[in-house]
Length: 238
Image 1: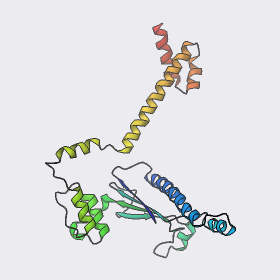
Image 2: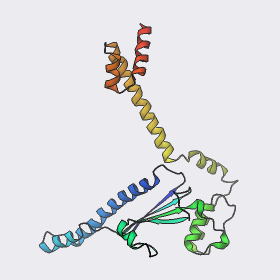
Image 3: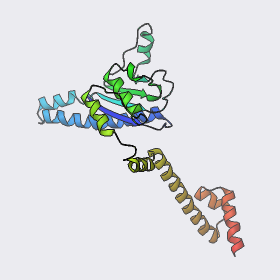
Image 4: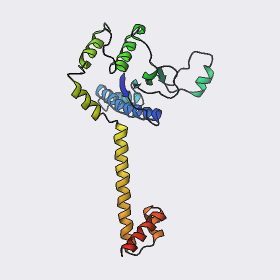
């Protein structure tokens, strides 16, 4: 079983699609490792080993993606949801049952919406409850409860900071916490601005060589108005 855990602070457009894409990439990586294990177990080109490897050609390991989100996820009513691959016919036939069986148990998405996790310290019953409580509240509470769980208590010990002594560290951490999406957005904007600048430079060169405004706009995929503005500017300079 292979588990990928994602923790997200910022809501994203096409969240479901992103989860599917990332799970697919993760599955491909684990499938490659799975095949390597099978190949090691049946290494030769004998008829028996080749046949054994063929039996596992399309087999995959269990791969689960866990998404812990600090934002509202779709229309989930509860804080916990799980996604599977289902057959429409199976869903119809199992309408009277508690839930239909998925096409495969080997692919699963576990979605946790921390905004809807509202349990108080007194209401924590399972270790999962305690972990989610810790993740949600560690950054805003002066003191966390004793969980009586070595792993959880050690986690609390390691993340505990003194607000006065470590003030500079906390300020630096906040200052450098820029979301990946913001970085991608800035990179994309820079790319677009750079691409537009290059096309305008090409347009200016073509206009100076005598090409028409319409042809330059068509070739460089610029608006006629923008190219005409550039042509007028060149004319005025002359």
